[in-house]
Image 1 (cartoon, rainbow, N blue to C red):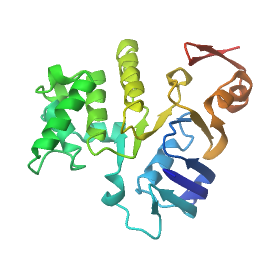
Image 2: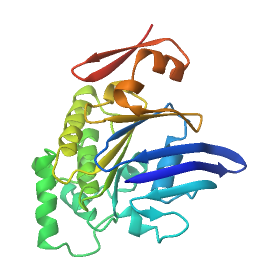
Image 3: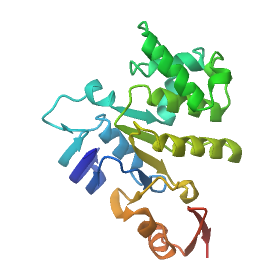
Length: 258
């Protein structure tokens, strides 16, 4: 198992943020985590990265059992993450190449001397993600789409077992969004591909590689299972509590109001 959550609950300031979360991800599975703003997605991700600990239930991520094993950086180095919080922490004066390299140390900025193998890997990731042409440009000068692809490269430097992409297309125009989604699909097909959790509230970003979907609403699992069974008109009408219609085209869903 990549992760296993059993009857997990999280209480903050007297309120239940998450309740009765049961979720298992097997190696090789890629999941979409779908939920509207305020559904509890961010809290759930913080828990997977050991920034939050469950108030109740059992959590096991990449073989690490919460409350028993050593977590912290020991766990986080096996998880690649791209999020708006991380994006805000990156040093804007670092080059795209330096940002990717920093992923080898799970640090913000470079404070250690990279090995030749690390340098070669960072360069290859920049090429794979179509970032090599601006490898020596300052991160702050890049477009939002370019920045996101650089952060994906950083997340992949340690060959993570789990890659979490937290609404990575926020703020991107249509072209930049589709370029990033193509890169994600490509990553998922690699020999050392991690399991991916793709967090979104946009149904049309669900790629063919996402075999499973978990629908989160009001801090609880509304439904989960194979994507083809989750992303349909009847299920999403109930999930969003409004009549919607799902059309599939080129193995990707499109959502519209009835």
